[in-house]
Image 1 (cartoon, rainbow, N blue to C red):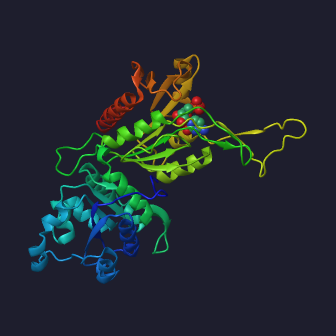
Image 2: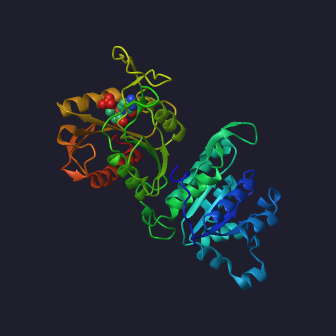
Length: 421
Ligand code: C5P
């Protein structure tokens, strides 16, 4: 995840942390500690049920300031009204965000201090959900998450794993350092996401988008690998454009030399098999964009560096999993739109159409790589769908991404109205 390893500087940032009532509440103590280490100032609000899991004094001690919990606390109201509490923050973080708290926030209830603050704030709200996996997967919770997303909220997690109740699946709260990284992204000035009350969300608000980008590296031995020339610029630009359009985006990036895009949860992988595993972990999603140049083959890697003595070694290539085709063939939770890319050096449109059919995607973005697309800032693409081919003019990769996000919004609208893309 973005910056989870590098220590982010959050000096002077004011975080309002709302702690919900879940077993994961103890992890929020660590979150406050990590925020403090990075120079952030945290005010803590606990719900009544949060106090059943962690003592108020523990939060007061790590935050270095009293905990707020009472909507009708005259003393606190005199010192700083509840509206002030939500306005003076740079970011509001709800961790753990229980199913109940998510539901109350989505409904716009103001029946305790936590929900009143969520309703009164004019700042971005970041939710770190934590709940039983059935509760997370329940259509009611998913509806509530989509509603909050379209109101401009962002989410980190939940992660898959063993739950306190013994079940396994999505529902665990993200680790404190991952939440810190998501806080850094949410605070970035140029996320382009709508703020609460900022007048309308983007066309992908409430949608989940997963994007692959960059090359994969397939090791030959501990020092050598097979790679390709993909820079990741186009895939990263698409992830950023989808986030600007309001989507919750996970970018699965191979090894690249460009920065993680703002407002996007980025996971770094090396090989095709790692990329597939990360994509499957990030699903379900509404849209999957396979912009990565995945190595078609890998080598059974040698455990030790291959020596130069004797005849040159011959490499036996093994086929890698096709991530795009695998996702397009999912029967249960196939994304509503699956987008593939085709980089060709000849017979572009014929091969692109053939690939469109073979991979089972809904849209294929074809580019002629003879004209130096790799690493360049511009791209000439052709969009293949079941309806035919659209030729786009030469555009910079940001503009291609922006236009593509616009087409995805149109296709979702067509699907809602019962028309195929
Ligand atoms: O077959 P080809 O590699 O040309 O297909 C390109 C498209 O398929 C791209 O969208 C790429 O991301 C995807 N792909 C994949 N997994 C592979 C090979 C390609 O997802 N192993």
